[in-house]
Amino acid sequence: MPRALISVSDKTGIIPFAKGLAALDYEIISTGGTLKQLQEAGIPAVAVSEVTKFDEIMDGRVKTLHPAIHGGLLARRDDESHMQQLKERDITPIDLVAVNLYPFKNTIEKTGVTEADAIENIDIGGPTMLRSAAKNFAGVTVLVDPDDYDTTLSALQQGELSYEAKRRLAGKVFRHTANYDAMIAAYFAELNEEQDTETMTLTYEKVQSLRYGENPHQKAAFYKDAIVKGASIANAKQLHGKELSYNNIQDANAALEIVMEFQEPAAVAVKHMNPCGVGIGETISSAFHKAFEADPTSIFGGIVALNREVDRDTALQLKEIFLEIVIAPGFTEEAMALLTEKKNIRLLELAADKIQQPKKVVSVSGGLLVQDYDIGTVTEADLTVATDRKPTEEELKNLLFAWKVVKHVKSNAIVVAKDDQTIGVGAGQMNRVGAAKIALEQAGENAAGAVLASDAFFPMPDTVEAAVKAGVTAIIQPGGSKRDEDSVAVCNAHNIAMVYTDMRHFKH
Image 1 (cartoon, rainbow, N blue to C red):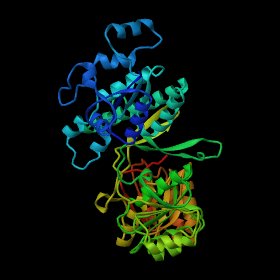
Image 2: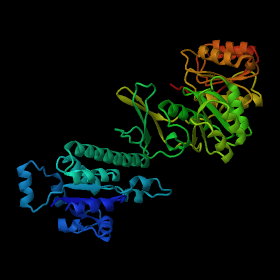
Image 3: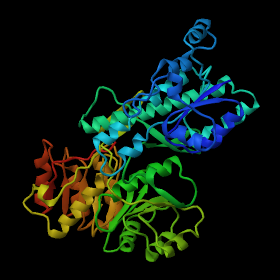
Image 4: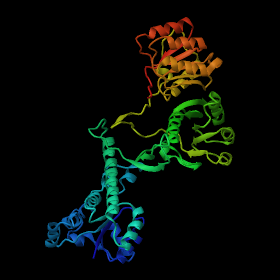
Protein backbone atom coordinates (compact mmCIF):
# COMPACT_ATOMS: atom_id res chain seq x y z
CA MET A 1 0.00 0.00 0.00
CA PRO A 2 1.50 3.39 -0.97
CA ARG A 3 1.69 6.00 1.77
CA ALA A 4 0.89 9.72 1.53
CA LEU A 5 1.71 12.44 4.07
CA ILE A 6 -0.70 15.36 4.07
CA SER A 7 -0.25 18.43 6.29
CA VAL A 8 -1.46 21.76 4.96
CA SER A 9 -2.15 25.25 6.29
CA ASP A 10 -3.99 26.19 3.09
CA LYS A 11 -6.65 23.49 2.89
CA THR A 12 -7.96 24.52 -0.54
CA GLY A 13 -8.87 21.38 -2.51
CA ILE A 14 -7.37 18.99 0.00
CA ILE A 15 -10.51 16.95 0.69
CA PRO A 16 -11.23 15.87 -2.91
CA PHE A 17 -7.51 15.24 -3.42
CA ALA A 18 -7.30 13.06 -0.31
CA LYS A 19 -10.47 11.20 -1.31
CA GLY A 20 -8.89 10.48 -4.67
CA LEU A 21 -5.76 9.14 -3.00
CA ALA A 22 -7.82 6.97 -0.64
CA ALA A 23 -9.67 5.54 -3.65
CA LEU A 24 -6.25 4.55 -5.04
CA ASP A 25 -5.56 2.67 -1.77
CA TYR A 26 -3.10 5.20 -0.36
CA GLU A 27 -2.57 5.09 3.38
CA ILE A 28 -2.78 8.69 4.57
CA ILE A 29 -0.86 10.05 7.54
CA SER A 30 -1.46 13.57 8.76
CA THR A 31 -1.17 16.12 11.57
CA GLY A 32 -3.20 18.61 13.59
CA GLY A 33 -6.00 20.49 11.87
CA THR A 34 -5.48 18.66 8.58
CA LEU A 35 -5.93 15.28 10.28
CA LYS A 36 -9.11 16.46 11.96
CA GLN A 37 -10.57 17.79 8.69
CA LEU A 38 -9.76 14.58 6.83
CA GLN A 39 -11.35 12.43 9.51
CA GLU A 40 -14.45 14.64 9.64
CA ALA A 41 -14.78 14.14 5.88
CA GLY A 42 -14.75 10.38 6.42
CA ILE A 43 -11.30 9.88 4.91
CA PRO A 44 -9.22 7.24 6.73
CA ALA A 45 -6.15 8.98 8.11
CA VAL A 46 -3.55 8.12 10.73
CA ALA A 47 -1.87 10.61 13.06
CA VAL A 48 1.85 11.12 12.50
CA SER A 49 2.36 10.43 16.20
CA GLU A 50 1.14 6.85 15.63
CA VAL A 51 3.82 6.44 12.98
CA THR A 52 6.63 8.00 15.01
CA LYS A 53 5.45 6.53 18.33
CA PHE A 54 6.26 9.96 19.71
CA ASP A 55 3.67 12.49 20.81
CA GLU A 56 3.69 16.03 19.45
CA ILE A 57 5.51 18.29 21.92
CA MET A 58 6.15 21.99 22.47
CA ASP A 59 2.73 23.04 21.16
CA GLY A 60 3.31 21.16 17.92
CA ARG A 61 6.76 22.61 17.23
CA VAL A 62 8.14 19.05 17.17
CA LYS A 63 5.98 16.42 15.48
CA THR A 64 7.36 15.44 12.06
CA LEU A 65 11.08 15.89 12.79
CA HIS A 66 11.63 12.16 13.28
CA PRO A 67 13.53 9.34 11.48
CA ALA A 68 10.26 7.47 10.92
CA ILE A 69 9.17 10.37 8.73
CA HIS A 70 12.40 11.53 7.14
CA GLY A 71 13.73 8.01 6.67
CA GLY A 72 10.55 7.26 4.73
CA LEU A 73 11.06 10.39 2.64
CA LEU A 74 14.79 10.25 1.95
CA ALA A 75 15.42 6.55 1.35
CA ARG A 76 16.41 5.94 -2.26
CA ARG A 77 14.21 3.26 -3.73
CA ASP A 78 17.03 2.07 -6.01
CA ASP A 79 19.51 1.68 -3.17
CA GLU A 80 19.32 -1.76 -1.56
CA SER A 81 21.11 -0.62 1.61
CA HIS A 82 18.63 2.24 2.10
CA MET A 83 15.67 -0.07 1.72
CA GLN A 84 17.25 -2.66 4.00
CA GLN A 85 17.75 -0.03 6.70
CA LEU A 86 14.08 0.94 6.45
CA LYS A 87 13.11 -2.69 6.85
CA GLU A 88 15.38 -3.20 9.86
CA ARG A 89 13.86 -0.18 11.60
CA ASP A 90 10.28 -0.91 10.55
CA ILE A 91 10.00 2.38 8.60
CA THR A 92 7.47 2.56 5.79
CA PRO A 93 8.45 4.56 2.69
CA ILE A 94 6.39 7.69 2.03
CA ASP A 95 5.46 7.95 -1.64
CA LEU A 96 3.62 11.26 -1.79
CA VAL A 97 3.80 14.48 0.21
CA ALA A 98 1.26 17.31 0.10
CA VAL A 99 2.45 20.06 2.42
CA ASN A 100 2.15 23.83 2.54
CA LEU A 101 3.48 26.12 5.18
CA TYR A 102 2.49 28.30 8.10
CA PRO A 103 1.20 31.63 6.74
CA PHE A 104 4.26 33.73 7.56
CA LYS A 105 3.58 36.27 4.79
CA ASN A 106 -0.06 36.78 5.82
CA THR A 107 1.02 37.14 9.43
CA ILE A 108 3.60 39.89 8.89
CA GLU A 109 1.21 41.79 6.60
CA LYS A 110 -1.32 42.17 9.42
CA THR A 111 -1.57 45.58 11.05
CA GLY A 112 0.02 45.57 14.48
CA VAL A 113 1.58 42.12 14.21
CA THR A 114 4.00 41.43 17.04
CA GLU A 115 7.47 40.01 16.69
CA ALA A 116 6.37 36.98 18.73
CA ASP A 117 3.45 36.28 16.37
CA ALA A 118 5.70 36.54 13.34
CA ILE A 119 8.31 34.18 14.77
CA GLU A 120 5.68 31.65 15.84
CA ASN A 121 4.55 31.49 12.21
CA ILE A 122 7.95 30.43 10.94
CA ASP A 123 7.43 26.87 9.78
CA ILE A 124 10.25 24.39 10.49
CA GLY A 125 8.82 20.92 9.99
CA GLY A 126 7.00 21.80 6.78
CA PRO A 127 9.99 23.08 4.80
CA THR A 128 12.08 20.20 6.12
CA MET A 129 9.58 17.62 4.84
CA LEU A 130 9.24 19.41 1.53
CA ARG A 131 12.99 19.60 1.00
CA SER A 132 13.46 15.95 1.96
CA ALA A 133 10.75 14.84 -0.44
CA ALA A 134 11.95 17.13 -3.24
CA LYS A 135 15.53 15.90 -2.91
CA ASN A 136 14.23 12.36 -3.38
CA PHE A 137 11.72 13.27 -6.09
CA ALA A 138 12.56 10.17 -8.14
CA GLY A 139 10.76 8.13 -5.48
CA VAL A 140 8.49 10.71 -3.84
CA THR A 141 5.83 12.87 -5.46
CA VAL A 142 5.81 16.22 -3.66
CA LEU A 143 3.16 18.93 -3.90
CA VAL A 144 3.17 22.40 -2.38
CA ASP A 145 0.54 24.08 -4.57
CA PRO A 146 -3.19 23.14 -4.53
CA ASP A 147 -3.28 23.97 -8.26
CA ASP A 148 -1.28 20.78 -8.85
CA TYR A 149 -3.67 18.42 -7.07
CA ASP A 150 -5.98 17.65 -10.00
CA THR A 151 -3.29 17.00 -12.61
CA THR A 152 -1.30 14.86 -10.18
CA LEU A 153 -4.32 12.82 -9.15
CA SER A 154 -5.31 12.32 -12.78
CA ALA A 155 -1.82 11.05 -13.62
CA LEU A 156 -1.85 8.67 -10.65
CA GLN A 157 -5.23 7.36 -11.74
CA GLN A 158 -3.73 6.66 -15.18
CA GLY A 159 -0.78 4.84 -13.67
CA GLU A 160 2.14 6.91 -12.39
CA LEU A 161 3.73 10.34 -12.73
CA SER A 162 6.66 10.54 -15.09
CA TYR A 163 10.16 11.32 -13.84
CA GLU A 164 9.96 14.69 -15.61
CA ALA A 165 6.66 15.55 -13.94
CA LYS A 166 8.06 14.70 -10.51
CA ARG A 167 11.16 16.77 -11.20
CA ARG A 168 9.02 19.78 -12.18
CA LEU A 169 7.08 19.47 -8.92
CA ALA A 170 10.35 19.22 -6.97
CA GLY A 171 11.65 22.38 -8.65
CA LYS A 172 8.47 24.18 -7.64
CA VAL A 173 9.02 23.08 -4.06
CA PHE A 174 12.54 24.47 -3.89
CA ARG A 175 11.36 27.78 -5.35
CA HIS A 176 8.59 27.83 -2.75
CA THR A 177 10.87 27.18 0.21
CA ALA A 178 13.43 29.68 -1.11
CA ASN A 179 10.66 32.28 -1.37
CA TYR A 180 9.55 31.47 2.17
CA ASP A 181 13.06 31.73 3.62
CA ALA A 182 13.76 34.95 1.70
CA MET A 183 10.71 36.61 3.28
CA ILE A 184 11.88 35.52 6.73
CA ALA A 185 15.40 36.81 6.05
CA ALA A 186 13.98 40.15 4.87
CA TYR A 187 11.80 40.38 7.97
CA PHE A 188 14.78 39.86 10.29
CA ALA A 189 16.90 42.36 8.34
CA GLU A 190 14.14 44.92 8.85
CA LEU A 191 13.80 44.05 12.54
CA ASN A 192 17.54 44.41 13.04
CA GLU A 193 17.73 47.56 10.89
CA GLU A 194 20.52 45.94 8.89
CA GLN A 195 21.83 47.60 5.74
CA ASP A 196 24.15 46.11 3.12
CA THR A 197 23.93 42.57 4.52
CA GLU A 198 26.62 40.07 3.54
CA THR A 199 24.19 38.33 1.19
CA MET A 200 20.93 39.54 -0.32
CA THR A 201 18.18 37.11 -1.23
CA LEU A 202 15.26 38.64 -3.11
CA THR A 203 11.95 36.95 -3.80
CA TYR A 204 9.32 37.89 -6.32
CA GLU A 205 5.98 36.36 -7.26
CA LYS A 206 4.77 36.12 -10.83
CA VAL A 207 2.03 38.53 -11.80
CA GLN A 208 1.77 37.55 -15.45
CA SER A 209 3.61 36.39 -18.52
CA LEU A 210 4.02 39.19 -21.06
CA ARG A 211 3.61 38.95 -24.80
CA TYR A 212 7.19 40.18 -25.18
CA GLY A 213 9.72 42.54 -23.63
CA GLU A 214 10.92 45.92 -24.84
CA ASN A 215 10.93 44.49 -28.36
CA PRO A 216 9.01 41.59 -29.94
CA HIS A 217 12.06 39.30 -30.10
CA GLN A 218 12.56 39.48 -26.30
CA LYS A 219 10.71 37.20 -23.89
CA ALA A 220 9.45 38.77 -20.67
CA ALA A 221 7.37 38.29 -17.53
CA PHE A 222 6.17 40.56 -14.72
CA TYR A 223 6.97 39.72 -11.10
CA LYS A 224 6.11 41.58 -7.92
CA ASP A 225 7.92 41.89 -4.63
CA ALA A 226 6.39 39.25 -2.38
CA ILE A 227 5.62 41.69 0.43
CA VAL A 228 5.45 45.07 -1.33
CA LYS A 229 3.00 47.51 0.19
CA GLY A 230 1.62 50.82 -1.00
CA ALA A 231 1.59 52.24 -4.50
CA SER A 232 2.98 49.74 -6.96
CA ILE A 233 1.84 48.90 -10.47
CA ALA A 234 1.98 45.30 -9.28
CA ASN A 235 -0.82 46.14 -6.83
CA ALA A 236 -2.98 48.04 -9.32
CA LYS A 237 -6.46 46.81 -10.18
CA GLN A 238 -7.04 46.79 -13.92
CA LEU A 239 -10.61 47.85 -14.62
CA HIS A 240 -10.59 47.86 -18.42
CA GLY A 241 -8.50 47.34 -21.51
CA LYS A 242 -5.85 45.09 -22.97
CA GLU A 243 -3.23 43.27 -20.96
CA LEU A 244 -0.27 45.43 -19.92
CA SER A 245 2.93 45.13 -21.90
CA TYR A 246 6.54 45.37 -20.68
CA ASN A 247 6.86 48.97 -21.86
CA ASN A 248 3.42 49.84 -20.45
CA ILE A 249 4.56 48.69 -17.01
CA GLN A 250 7.83 50.64 -17.19
CA ASP A 251 6.06 53.85 -18.26
CA ALA A 252 3.22 53.39 -15.78
CA ASN A 253 5.73 53.00 -12.96
CA ALA A 254 7.50 56.21 -14.02
CA ALA A 255 4.21 58.14 -14.14
CA LEU A 256 3.17 56.82 -10.75
CA GLU A 257 6.45 57.81 -9.10
CA ILE A 258 6.12 61.37 -10.40
CA VAL A 259 2.48 61.91 -9.45
CA MET A 260 3.25 60.72 -5.91
CA GLU A 261 5.40 63.83 -5.45
CA PHE A 262 2.31 66.05 -5.25
CA GLN A 263 -0.32 66.59 -2.58
CA GLU A 264 -2.46 68.97 -4.64
CA PRO A 265 -4.45 67.67 -7.65
CA ALA A 266 -1.81 66.61 -10.17
CA ALA A 267 -1.63 65.00 -13.59
CA VAL A 268 1.42 63.46 -15.24
CA ALA A 269 1.86 62.33 -18.83
CA VAL A 270 4.80 60.02 -19.59
CA LYS A 271 6.45 58.75 -22.76
CA HIS A 272 9.40 56.38 -22.70
CA MET A 273 9.77 56.78 -18.92
CA ASN A 274 10.17 60.57 -19.09
CA PRO A 275 7.48 63.13 -18.28
CA CYS A 276 6.25 64.99 -21.34
CA GLY A 277 3.70 67.04 -19.38
CA VAL A 278 3.00 67.71 -15.71
CA GLY A 279 0.38 70.03 -14.28
CA ILE A 280 -1.19 70.87 -10.93
CA GLY A 281 -4.44 72.72 -10.35
CA GLU A 282 -7.39 73.29 -8.08
CA THR A 283 -9.20 70.35 -9.69
CA ILE A 284 -7.97 67.18 -11.36
CA SER A 285 -9.61 68.38 -14.58
CA SER A 286 -7.60 71.62 -14.61
CA ALA A 287 -4.43 69.73 -13.66
CA PHE A 288 -4.84 67.38 -16.61
CA HIS A 289 -5.58 70.26 -18.96
CA LYS A 290 -2.21 71.77 -18.01
CA ALA A 291 -0.41 68.44 -18.43
CA PHE A 292 -1.92 68.05 -21.90
CA GLU A 293 -1.19 71.61 -22.99
CA ALA A 294 2.42 71.22 -21.83
CA ASP A 295 3.09 68.96 -24.84
CA PRO A 296 0.00 67.97 -26.84
CA THR A 297 2.18 66.18 -29.39
CA SER A 298 4.21 63.86 -27.16
CA ILE A 299 1.25 62.80 -25.02
CA PHE A 300 -0.14 60.86 -28.01
CA GLY A 301 0.11 57.17 -27.11
CA GLY A 302 1.31 58.05 -23.61
CA ILE A 303 0.54 57.05 -20.06
CA VAL A 304 -1.33 59.38 -17.71
CA ALA A 305 -1.27 59.20 -13.91
CA LEU A 306 -3.59 61.26 -11.71
CA ASN A 307 -3.75 61.55 -7.93
CA ARG A 308 -7.49 62.21 -7.70
CA GLU A 309 -10.58 60.31 -8.82
CA VAL A 310 -11.34 60.78 -12.51
CA ASP A 311 -14.60 62.70 -12.90
CA ARG A 312 -16.73 63.37 -15.97
CA ASP A 313 -14.91 66.57 -16.98
CA THR A 314 -11.52 64.88 -16.84
CA ALA A 315 -12.81 61.80 -18.65
CA LEU A 316 -14.11 63.94 -21.50
CA GLN A 317 -10.60 65.33 -21.99
CA LEU A 318 -8.93 61.93 -21.70
CA LYS A 319 -11.33 60.39 -24.18
CA GLU A 320 -10.26 62.77 -26.94
CA ILE A 321 -6.65 61.56 -26.91
CA PHE A 322 -5.09 58.22 -27.81
CA LEU A 323 -3.69 57.02 -24.49
CA GLU A 324 -2.29 53.63 -23.55
CA ILE A 325 -3.04 53.81 -19.82
CA VAL A 326 -4.81 55.99 -17.28
CA ILE A 327 -3.88 55.44 -13.62
CA ALA A 328 -6.01 56.99 -10.88
CA PRO A 329 -7.26 56.29 -7.36
CA GLY A 330 -10.73 55.77 -8.84
CA PHE A 331 -13.17 56.59 -11.61
CA THR A 332 -16.72 57.86 -11.24
CA GLU A 333 -19.50 55.90 -12.96
CA GLU A 334 -19.81 58.62 -15.60
CA ALA A 335 -16.06 58.58 -16.19
CA MET A 336 -16.02 54.79 -16.56
CA ALA A 337 -18.91 54.90 -19.01
CA LEU A 338 -17.09 57.45 -21.16
CA LEU A 339 -13.65 55.88 -21.08
CA THR A 340 -14.73 52.27 -21.60
CA GLU A 341 -16.17 53.28 -24.96
CA LYS A 342 -12.53 53.04 -26.02
CA LYS A 343 -11.88 49.30 -26.26
CA ASN A 344 -8.14 49.18 -25.76
CA ILE A 345 -7.38 51.88 -23.19
CA ARG A 346 -6.10 50.38 -19.96
CA LEU A 347 -7.70 51.81 -16.81
CA LEU A 348 -5.78 51.10 -13.61
CA GLU A 349 -7.13 51.83 -10.15
CA LEU A 350 -4.39 52.59 -7.66
CA ALA A 351 -4.10 55.08 -4.83
CA ALA A 352 -0.98 57.24 -5.11
CA ASP A 353 0.26 56.39 -1.62
CA LYS A 354 3.93 56.28 -0.79
CA ILE A 355 5.43 52.90 -1.55
CA GLN A 356 6.73 51.03 1.47
CA GLN A 357 9.86 49.56 -0.01
CA PRO A 358 13.24 50.41 1.47
CA LYS A 359 15.49 49.57 -1.50
CA LYS A 360 15.60 50.09 -5.25
CA VAL A 361 17.17 47.22 -7.15
CA VAL A 362 18.54 47.50 -10.69
CA SER A 363 20.04 44.61 -12.61
CA VAL A 364 23.35 44.79 -14.41
CA SER A 365 25.01 41.97 -16.33
CA GLY A 366 25.83 39.38 -13.71
CA GLY A 367 24.82 41.45 -10.71
CA LEU A 368 22.57 43.94 -8.96
CA LEU A 369 22.87 47.52 -7.86
CA VAL A 370 20.95 48.25 -4.67
CA GLN A 371 20.24 51.68 -3.23
CA ASP A 372 17.68 53.59 -1.21
CA TYR A 373 14.80 55.10 -3.13
CA ASP A 374 15.36 58.75 -3.99
CA ILE A 375 12.81 60.15 -1.57
CA GLY A 376 14.73 63.38 -1.08
CA THR A 377 12.49 66.44 -0.92
CA VAL A 378 13.23 70.14 -0.78
CA THR A 379 11.21 72.89 0.87
CA GLU A 380 11.65 76.65 0.84
CA ALA A 381 13.57 76.40 4.10
CA ASP A 382 16.18 74.14 2.45
CA LEU A 383 17.03 76.59 -0.31
CA THR A 384 20.05 78.88 -0.41
CA VAL A 385 19.71 82.05 -2.47
CA ALA A 386 22.94 82.42 -4.45
CA THR A 387 22.16 85.64 -6.34
CA ASP A 388 21.55 89.24 -5.45
CA ARG A 389 17.86 88.89 -6.22
CA LYS A 390 15.63 86.49 -4.33
CA PRO A 391 12.90 84.65 -6.25
CA THR A 392 9.40 86.10 -6.02
CA GLU A 393 6.67 84.11 -4.32
CA GLU A 394 5.32 82.97 -7.70
CA GLU A 395 8.79 82.05 -8.94
CA LEU A 396 9.49 80.14 -5.75
CA LYS A 397 6.30 78.13 -6.16
CA ASN A 398 7.21 77.19 -9.71
CA LEU A 399 10.83 76.45 -8.79
CA LEU A 400 9.72 73.89 -6.20
CA PHE A 401 7.25 72.43 -8.70
CA ALA A 402 9.94 72.11 -11.38
CA TRP A 403 12.32 70.54 -8.86
CA LYS A 404 9.82 67.77 -8.09
CA VAL A 405 9.57 66.99 -11.80
CA VAL A 406 13.26 67.18 -12.76
CA LYS A 407 13.97 64.56 -10.11
CA HIS A 408 12.21 62.03 -12.37
CA VAL A 409 13.70 63.07 -15.72
CA LYS A 410 16.59 61.06 -17.13
CA SER A 411 19.95 62.79 -16.67
CA ASN A 412 21.17 65.15 -17.91
CA ALA A 413 17.84 66.77 -17.14
CA ILE A 414 16.39 70.24 -17.50
CA VAL A 415 12.78 71.24 -16.79
CA VAL A 416 11.26 74.61 -17.68
CA ALA A 417 8.02 75.46 -15.84
CA LYS A 418 5.50 78.25 -15.57
CA ASP A 419 2.09 78.66 -13.93
CA ASP A 420 2.13 75.20 -12.28
CA GLN A 421 2.89 73.49 -15.57
CA THR A 422 5.91 72.07 -17.34
CA ILE A 423 6.48 73.84 -20.64
CA GLY A 424 9.78 72.25 -21.63
CA VAL A 425 11.59 69.03 -20.72
CA GLY A 426 15.11 68.11 -21.83
CA ALA A 427 15.93 64.52 -20.93
CA GLY A 428 18.82 62.09 -21.13
CA GLN A 429 21.32 64.26 -22.98
CA MET A 430 25.06 63.74 -22.94
CA ASN A 431 25.65 67.34 -21.85
CA ARG A 432 23.61 69.75 -19.79
CA VAL A 433 23.45 72.59 -22.29
CA GLY A 434 22.04 70.14 -24.83
CA ALA A 435 19.25 69.24 -22.43
CA ALA A 436 18.60 72.95 -21.80
CA LYS A 437 18.39 73.72 -25.53
CA ILE A 438 15.77 70.99 -26.01
CA ALA A 439 13.69 72.17 -23.05
CA LEU A 440 13.91 75.85 -23.99
CA GLU A 441 13.14 75.18 -27.63
CA GLN A 442 10.04 73.27 -26.58
CA ALA A 443 9.00 76.12 -24.28
CA GLY A 444 9.49 78.64 -27.11
CA GLU A 445 8.21 82.16 -26.48
CA ASN A 446 6.46 80.88 -23.33
CA ALA A 447 9.90 80.57 -21.69
CA ALA A 448 9.79 84.30 -21.01
CA GLY A 449 9.07 84.67 -17.30
CA ALA A 450 9.45 80.92 -16.68
CA VAL A 451 11.72 79.08 -14.24
CA LEU A 452 14.33 76.43 -14.99
CA ALA A 453 15.37 73.40 -12.90
CA SER A 454 18.54 71.36 -13.39
CA ASP A 455 19.05 67.94 -11.77
CA ALA A 456 22.75 68.67 -11.20
CA PHE A 457 25.04 71.69 -10.96
CA PHE A 458 26.30 73.79 -13.86
CA PRO A 459 30.01 73.15 -14.51
CA MET A 460 30.01 76.13 -16.86
CA PRO A 461 27.72 79.14 -17.32
CA ASP A 462 26.57 78.09 -20.81
CA THR A 463 23.25 76.63 -19.59
CA VAL A 464 22.49 79.82 -17.68
CA GLU A 465 23.38 81.89 -20.74
CA ALA A 466 20.88 79.85 -22.80
CA ALA A 467 18.24 80.45 -20.13
CA VAL A 468 18.94 84.20 -20.22
CA LYS A 469 18.39 84.35 -23.98
CA ALA A 470 15.08 82.50 -23.62
CA GLY A 471 13.79 84.90 -20.95
CA VAL A 472 13.93 82.61 -17.90
CA THR A 473 13.75 84.62 -14.66
CA ALA A 474 14.65 82.10 -11.96
CA ILE A 475 16.76 78.93 -11.73
CA ILE A 476 16.97 76.07 -9.22
CA GLN A 477 20.00 73.77 -9.14
CA PRO A 478 21.98 71.75 -6.57
CA GLY A 479 25.06 74.00 -6.49
CA GLY A 480 28.49 72.70 -5.64
CA SER A 481 30.45 73.33 -8.83
CA LYS A 482 33.90 74.89 -8.56
CA ARG A 483 32.64 77.42 -11.08
CA ASP A 484 29.31 78.24 -9.44
CA GLU A 485 30.32 81.89 -9.29
CA ASP A 486 30.49 82.06 -13.08
CA SER A 487 26.80 81.07 -13.32
CA VAL A 488 25.87 83.38 -10.44
CA ALA A 489 27.61 86.29 -12.18
CA VAL A 490 25.56 85.73 -15.35
CA CYS A 491 22.37 85.61 -13.29
CA ASN A 492 23.24 88.82 -11.44
CA ALA A 493 24.08 90.59 -14.68
CA HIS A 494 20.57 89.82 -15.98
CA ASN A 495 18.58 90.12 -12.72
CA ILE A 496 17.84 86.38 -12.58
CA ALA A 497 17.27 84.68 -9.23
CA MET A 498 19.14 81.45 -8.56
CA VAL A 499 18.73 79.10 -5.61
CA TYR A 500 20.74 76.06 -4.52
CA THR A 501 19.17 72.87 -3.12
CA ASP A 502 22.37 71.13 -1.97
CA MET A 503 20.79 67.95 -3.37
CA ARG A 504 21.18 66.48 -6.83
CA HIS A 505 18.87 64.03 -8.61
CA PHE A 506 20.88 62.01 -11.13
CA LYS A 507 18.64 59.43 -12.82
CA HIS A 508 20.32 56.93 -15.11
